[in-house]
Amino acid sequence: MSVVRIELPHCTYDVLIEPGALTRLGEVVRACAPHKRCGLLADPAVAQPWGELARQSLVRAGYGVAQVALEPGEKHKTLAAVERIYGALAEARLERRSPLIALGGGVTGDTVGFVAATWLRGVPFVQCPTTLLAMVDASVGGKVGVNLPAGKNLVGAFYQPVAVVIDPRVLGTLPARELGCGLAESIKHGVLGDPALLDLIERRMSELRGRDPQALAELVHRNVVVKAGVVMRDERESGERAHLNLGHTFAHAIEATMGYGELLHGEAVGLGLIAAAELAHRTGLCGAPLVARLRALVAAAGLPLTAALPDDEVLWAAMQRDKKVADDRLRFVLPEREGRVRMRDDLSRADVSAAWRAIRA
Ligand SMILES: NC(=O)c1ccc[n+]([C@@H]2O[C@H](COP(=O)([O-])OP(=O)(O)OC[C@H]3O[C@@H](n4cnc5c(N)ncnc54)[C@H](O)[C@@H]3O)[C@@H](O)[C@H]2O)c1
Ligand SMILES: [Zn+2]
Image (tube, rainbow, N blue to C red; front, top):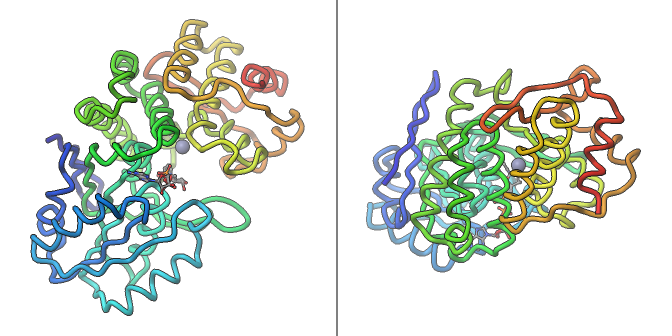
C-alpha cells in the first residue's frame, strides 16, 4: 500500500492507494472519524459491485450505514442536488460527527464535499474516487463545489477530507473514454511537475489502458505526489496552484463553445496541453521535441489530437470570460521543459490563434 500524507497548516490527512483498498474502507474511516453511523453517498454507476463492497466494509467496522444514491452526471452537480442530499441526511438523522463518504467520480466528490462543508456547519468526509480523473486530481486538494447556470464551479469552498481511499481495481468498470480523461490530467501533472511520470505513462501505457491494477496504482501515486506538493505549498491558489491550470485556459474555451458533452473534459485538456505546448514553442519557451512528445502521449492515451473548433473570435471571447482571467489579461500556464512550467500574460492574439490552428480539425 502507498500512503501520501497531505500536511496543511490546519489539518493533515492521508491518501491511501492500494488495489483492494475498498475492502478496508471501514477501518480507515473508523481511524479518522469514529462514530456509530455514517452516510455513504454513491454514484449509481458504481453501486454494484463497488458500493456494496464499501457498505460491507463500513458495516464490518461497526457503522450503521445510511445510503444515499446520487443522480449521476455533471448536470446534477447543482444546488438542487445539494438540497436533496441535505434532506436525505436529515431524514437519516445523521449527526455532527457522522462522516460522509463520497463514492464516485469528480462530480460525486465535488458535490458531496460541498454538502460535507455545509451540512451542520461541516462534518468529516472521506473521498473514495472511482474515476481515474478523480483519483489523480479532483479528490485531492479540498476544492469542493457545484455549478450554477452561469458557469461551472461558481459556488464552493476549500474543505479538506479526513482521508482519501483509492482502490485502482474500481477502474475495471470505467468506460475507456473516461479512463483517457484521467490520463490527460496525468500527462498534465507530468509536464508541470514530474518528468518521471511522463516516462511512466509512456513505458506502461498499454498496461494502464488494460487496467492493470499495479500499473494504475503507481500512476495514481505519482500523480497524487505532484498534486499534493502543489496544494501543500499553495492551498488557496494564490500562486503556484494556478500551475494546475496548464492546458485548461484552452480546454475551458473548447468546452464552453463546443457545448459540454461534445468532448469530455479530459479530452479538451488533452487538446489544451497540445495548444499550450505549441504556444510555448512559438514564443520560444520550449523546444519542438517537447511539443512532439506531448502529441505522441496524448495520441497514445487514445485522446483526440484535433477538434472541429469554432472561429477564433468565438474562442477568444470564451477565453476572456473564463474566471481565471486576472485584471483583464489572459494568463497562460506554459510548459518550459518536462517538469517545469511558467506563467505568461504577455502573449499576442496572433500567437494564441496559431495555437488554436494546431488543434483545429
Ligand atoms: N475538486 C477539484 O479539484 C476538481 C479537479 C478536477 C475536476 N473536478 C470536477 O470533477 C468533475 C469530473 O469528474 P469525473 O471525470 O470523475 O466525472 P464523473 O463523476 O461524472 O464520472 C464520469 C462518468 O463515469 C461514471 N463512473 C464513475 N466511476 C465509475 C466506475 N468505476 N465504473 C463505471 N462508471 C463509473 C460516472 O457515472 C460518470 O458517468 C467535474 O465536475 C470537474 O469540475 C474537480
Ligand atoms: Zn481538469
